[in-house]
Amino acid sequence: MSALVLARCEGVRPETGDVKVITLRVEGAHAHFLDTVLPGGHVAVRYPDGTGQLQQRLYSVTRVEEPNLFEIAVRRASYNGVSDRLHSDVREGVIIPLAITDAPRARLLLAETGRMLGVAPGKSILEILDDYGVPLRSGCRSGICGGCRIRIVGGECRVEADSSLNNAERANGYALACCVFPISGDVVIAVGAALRA
Ligand code: FES
Image 1 (tube, helix red, strand yellow):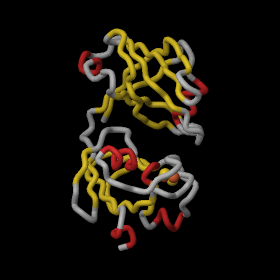
Image 2: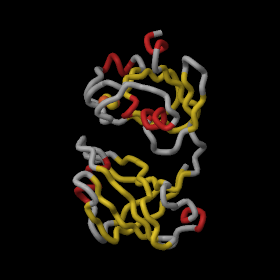
Image 3: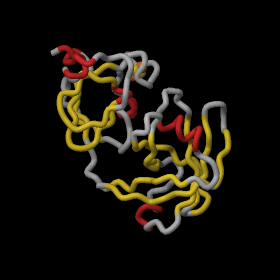
């Protein structure tokens, strides 16, 4: 379960060609939430992707001006996801829901080694493997090149659309690590030799 707080956009400024910095103000949020808003930390944005499907994605907090006034950085990904929608939609006055996640954290279990990795909410499996230094071939990071293929052996995940697997592969548990987001429980994946087992 997770609750929401509403953040009002107080400004948008381009940082580089692909990155916009969005200033958000949260009113009436519990101190528990505000304590989590720290430079270098993350907030979970609830927003539709390009197909209209509501998603939850983590964005970096780049600056905190006041306890309830902070900036997030949004990089355009150009595959019609949440970041692209935020790039095109958000201007001063737009309200953006932020999730306060109190769900039990998911864990990621590597089938070959039995290694267990902690999961930050909203991160893709590819991002989690990166965080822990687990090597996995990758390229586009947006479900196009097919380079980050893994197999999901068990666990609950949210899967974003990709354009390089067919239905038979998906039915057999194959997935792209950049498009899969653990939700809860122990998510077991095969990334190497165990991929074809
Ligand atoms: S890195 Fe290209 S599909 Fe995941």
